Length: 561
Image (cartoon, rainbow, N blue to C red; front, side, top):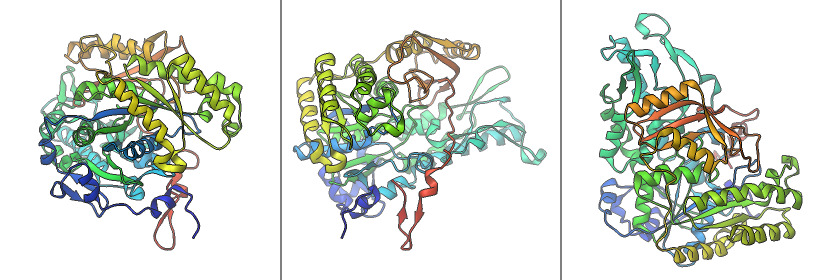
């Protein structure tokens, strides 16, 4: 029989352990599991509550350079590092976000790793999984329906139909739904008004699910969510509509973390999926806390590059939960550095040391971001065909001599945990050397919102300043006056550049960050700044990944990678 080569073939050829056996490795008893078949389970919330007070393991954050069309391999590195740490004898757990159907059928395909560094069951995780995304969409859209129902039945709260803040969601990329009109058809069909759809990972309900400590905290956060304003600009919340209780009911099962495993049997919590370029881009607090209470080392990832992912992990998730990473892995590839050095996509597989030398400025900026956040760092250089020894030597020497960090070659995509053993050894050494260390917040709660935004823009993105459009400036002042000034900020911008312009690659400096809109996620607990042309509902590419996904004659899925 031929050796499997595609991601889906490799995943299908695996022989996963029963999920109860995987859970037992972390000390989770079988009675604390709700099984979804033989290889997927949710961990009981009541059992998790009993973990309070246990010593915590060490948290390692995996992030990356600015993403490129070449793909850097951040998720595969998270998985490969977890497998390698387990090979070193560490009781290890991995924490990842759940894939969204939008990117899976859009441009990205599957999101469970690749090659020999995957979490399984691959098809199940990518497609519906345990229904968490559907629960988030149902809870979100229930609130949307209750908003329009309130308008229909007399609008006792005085909601201004022009100032409804709560859009609908759908877990499909569909640009045609970004702006719509609802309520057409006459008095029996509601109140006509402008509306729109966001993608489910951009829902504040998803952010709330991922930041909630427990069921009581979940319901309290849902209650605080803003749905709109009255004509006198008085905020109206989900609690005013008495919607938060029913929403919590819909999210009851979704709040429990999902447990699966890697191809090598390492326990992996895959739970929650907020977008990283719109929301905070981290898996759930409950999953991370459960992992830290049951494992010695926990490897998790933040979305996109360190500018969006690592900064939000620390300034939003860590601030809210008290769970601070103690070391970071910065994922890069020679191909990515060639791209940032100006090489076109079709030429990225060819050696080009001069381009790497130009593009390494991007890696430099990300290392400095992690240093600013107080995280000891090692660089993981993922190996691709076409990389040259000269290019590797240049990057390793540059990291060592100019940045004071080590760059390790990794081949976990091809060899699983064995291909990341040196990386695991370096990470273990960092944790040993920095036992009292922990990430540092970028700003204090008391800092004014506009200064928080300016701090992120100048210290993380390398910008000269921010440029607030008039509406955004007015909104910031309103939020400060309404008592939201102590919240952290979450910048929604393109992930493909430090600037708001995705065409500015490498490490642009002295640019100005344009902020066109300000939104408050009062339940999640952060203020969102919308920058540039970022869209909260993605569109499909010219040839979507969905055109390659189908069933074969035996009913097996093809094309999901």
